[in-house]
Each structure stands twice: as structure tokens, then as C-alpha cells.
View (spheres, rainbow, N blue to C red):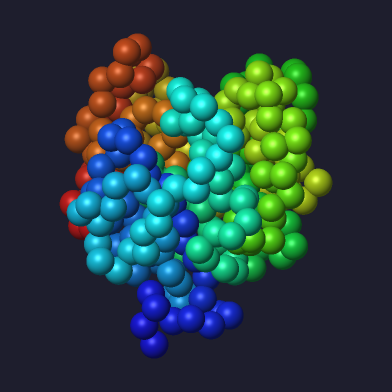
Amino acid sequence: MDRQTADNGTVVNIVTMKWGTAYGQEHVNKLYRSLEEYLSLPFRFVCFTDDPEGLDREIACFPIPEIAVEPPKLYTGWRKLALFKDELPIEGTCLFLDLDLLIVGSLEDLFSFRPGTIPIIRDWVPLGRRLFPKGPPVGNSSVFRFTANKTTFVYEQFLSERQWALDNFQPPQSYLTHCIRPKMSFWPPEWCVSFKECLRPTFPLNYFIEAKQPPTAKIIVFHGRPNPDQAAYGFKGKRPHHYVRPTSWVREYWEKY
């Protein structure tokens, strides 16, 4: 069976978004190609984008749905709310993946985990905020699961409180968390791991020791900097604790796909 074109209820969607120039077509293509190795379920890879040029022909490309957000905020994570509109050109279960991540383990469990919920990463926060939280935990929207055209309550809620939401929530994933909280669950922390928060050695060891890949991780998330291609070949950053030695396993991944 052609995993990309099969059209029945067993096919799942892998969804990503690309706009502007922050990420090139290679980020989309490498993400798609890695799925061939790490996802055995029949799947369709969908990219909502303003520029499909250079994407692998197996990738289903659609324009990014319009949403009620004006520039410059339009060109930020607020755009992910478009995935909760009705009349999306896809149906069924969707796993959203940001472009700045690496798939390093089997993804099947992400589709069976806590059915009926909207799973999302529990965002990584500094120790001080963990010890003295100012509110309920927030999700990190690098990886989340939803059902196309069946979770439209998120966008409908946004429309009902649009200006309040735009004025009071930063980053945008904190508003997404606010909307989905009644149905939200968190992925097991060992499944989705932050490169900079969990793997990069602390200063000054980051100058001498390469980041190590955790054996139980399914996804390595590169939120902020460095991006995967930067970690692969070394990253200086603006401060000493941002420095990353060239990371051999990231480089092997980046060059493989």
C-alpha cells in the first residue's frame, strides 16, 4: 500500500507549517524522509506553506489557512491556530511537528497515547519557575496531536476573545494551552526532549563535552537556538552557556536525510 496516498480511516496525518525564510525546504524534506524510517503506520505528510518550491513530490502542500491576526504577529506561532479552523483539506488524526526537531525513535505510540485528549509537550521552564510556579503548566507546541475539523472549538474561542488573547498571551503556545486545557494531556517527558534544556552540557562543560542522545527519546526538539543544522556543526551563540560543540549524531542525521 502506498503510505502517502492511501485514503482510508487507518491513514494518519503528519502536519507541519513553513512560511518565510527562517527554515528552508531541506528542513521539510528531511523531516518527511525521516518518517519513512520511524513511522510504520500508513501516513500522509502535509505541509501548509506559502512556498512549496523544492519540496519532495510526495509531500501534500496546501496554502496556510487565513486567520484573524495581523502582521507582524501573523508571522509567528499564532498561525498554528489555523489548524483548528473548519474546512481543512485533510481529515482524521493529525500529529503536528515543528520543523526544528529530529525524529529519533518510533512514533506509533504518539497516536495511541491517551485517546480523546490533545497531547502536547509540557514546556521546559527554569528551575525557579518549577519551584515557584506562577500558574498552571504551559504546553510547548512543537509536537501536539489533534483531529482535523473536529477540534474547531479552539479557533472559535479565539475569535470570541481575539484582542484579549493577542494582548495577554506571549508566546502564542500559552494561548493554545489556555484553549485546550480541558482536553489537554502531556506527552511523557522522555518522549520529546529539549536539546538545549536537557542535552546540552552546562557551562563550562559545554565547551568540552558533546551533547549525548538520550536512548528513550522519540523526538529531539530544537526550540530557539541552536537549530539542528547549527548543532550538527557547532554553534557559538551570544553567551558562553549557549555554546555547542559539533554534535556527531546530529550531523549524521542531518547528512543522512
